[in-house]
Length: 332
Picture (cartoon, rainbow, N blue to C red):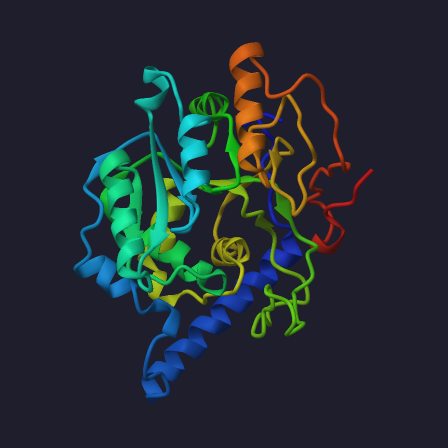
């Protein structure tokens, strides 16, 4: 599948109508609560946003075509090193169109850890260090705070969000985006619409207050997805009003659900919970070790492809947008 002349993927009419009614009801309820004095403070997850808007200057104003937002943690030094030496080791003409930033939180770092991070940033100048706590259950807050900061300080056309265990074929992604029919309202990745809401308190993905449905609203899996600038701006501008769910990718899909969005499902994004192996066609590959990244990059550099064949460990699905989300993603 290519972004060129790709079929526009839409949420089914019934599901979209439900979302619009939900959004309208939620807005009316919010207005009523505000007028009646029921809302006294914002969700605690939004504490860092006012600082990022008004007084945080950790990022100088920059301009780029593709902004790469890599979620990392202070201790993942080797992963960042591997990424710099592999898929971010780009030819000068490609590098000129890409701005990569590793996003870290420093709110709870010890002095020694903070010194090491600052030293790393001095050497590479590619860290975005935010005043947030770096913890799994606060990941959505970190993502939202990052989008606020990037929207404020970087001029870009598209944003790629990945984790630091993801490998990206950057030249291939740039080629797709430059020839895309979607200059705006683009939400590109591997979508899921039938994922059950995690309810078990024993699960680190538990969503105790996701009450919209028994399935998550269709979303692009978080190992890697692309947003056009206008969608990032919408999220950043409305950050104080957005509900923070436990899963950041679920949250992004939910935030964008009522909007007129070009949702492009692409099987070249290998971003499920378990990697499908290696394919010459892959653009984004999640769940990669440092050794996997180095092997892929070596093969790509020497032979021009990520691997020799297409050994899929598990079959992939095409998203069927003509059926209810619970039936969207049946594997062959």
